[in-house]
Amino acid sequence: MIKRFEDVINMARKKGPKTIAVAVAHDKEVLLAIKRALDFKIANSILVGDREKIVQIAEQIKLNIEDVKIIDEKDITKASLKAVELVSTGKAHMVMKGLVDTSIVLKAVLNNEVGLKTGKVLSHVAVFDLEKYDKLLFITDAAMNIAPGLKEKKEILENGVYVAHSLDIERPKVAVLCAKEKVNPKMPDTLDAQSLVSMCEKNEIQQCIVGGPFALDNAISMEAAKHKGITHEVAGDTDILLVPDIEAGNILYKALVFLTEAENAGVIVGAKAPVILTSRADSDKAKLNSIALGVLMASNNKK
Image (cartoon, rainbow, N blue to C red; front, side, top):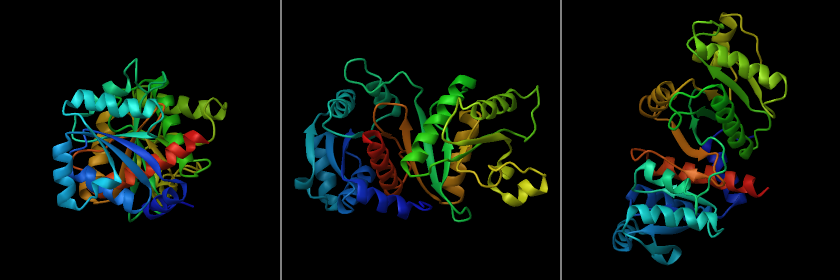
């Protein structure tokens, strides 16, 4: 069973290598991650961006440019479109954001001619390897959807379940997070949680177990759940935390990154192929973890 990022890397080595198209690739942390992915035989790369800058950085980090393909495109919008086109035409399996704003990459992903849109909600799934938690913890959506309604939350949840399935977690446990663990008509998110649980019970949401509403403590702490008399099988043993909105998700994400220094990864789900999207502040290790996650998702797509 996959419990740590070491397991994710090892699994990606068995299922790889896949090919990444990097949009605006002249970024040191991104190229360090690309180098490590090559070293681990997880992924090959097509680097789209300013060739001169890419080569300069490659020399600094000792990345052999003979091991990668470079497409020289200095315009960041055109470079993003080209990277996405490489995926939509089958020349690459996933697209990765380099030194470019997220909005530009996502606009390329949603392009009508060469894009990867499916009609589904696009959402961000973050995965954390926490020292005090006995398995990987997924958080969604901390980066894309500002204030999702019930319909959007259902799709965001299903996107998270898809990522968990890519890591061979057959029936992930999903906790719908709210400020408290009791349904309150004055708190709409608790009503959404109740509805999502009902959808799962009716098999409208499949291949997972959904519980909620949960406060964060009783979602991830068995002791806290027992103290409050919560006996649901998700309580204290959550795989996926479904946050109520981007404010809660973003704060939780950054608290874990900067206060716990936990290893993490991030991907955009809902497109035809994985979109590896990490913060510019994320380390090359986080970017490598995200590549490995993308490799497993691409393998799941093929399956």
